[in-house]
Amino acid sequence: MQATSTGLLGVGYEGRNLSEFVDQLIADSVEHLVDVRLTPISRKPGFSKNALREALAAVGIGYEHRPELGNPRPNRAGFSGDERALHRARTVYAATLSEPAAAQAVQDLAVMAQSARVAVLCFEADQDRCHRHVVLTHVAKRRVSKADSRRPAR
Image (tube, rainbow, N blue to C red; front, top):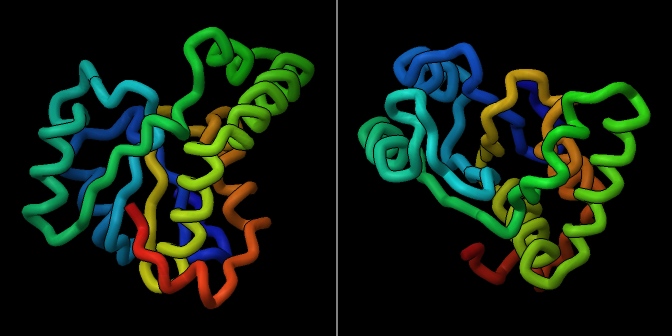
């Protein structure tokens, strides 16, 4: 897990079981988890949307799925490719964040992170090889005005 200065962490569950994953969220004082997988289904027990929501609720951590921040399937391979492919995949994904729903989700994350410790979730353990790296970068660049911060997140 890597912390950012915006009140956000990026988290991946690759190589972890549900219990150790939740324990780490608790240790990192996470209050809310935002799932940025396009499709929140997993073959790993406990990491599909409803099971994960229930496990987090049991320890007082909120859960929210934001599919508008998911990485389109055709763009995924680039994140595990060479440096050129990685750069191209990040560029393609970053362009999707300008779509209205995605831009609003980035704004909502920025607002939420002003008052809570928020974890942004995807599968990949290596954040540099995951689209959540791009999400966190965009949120960190986002300036949140006082008017925006009064608007509740979705």
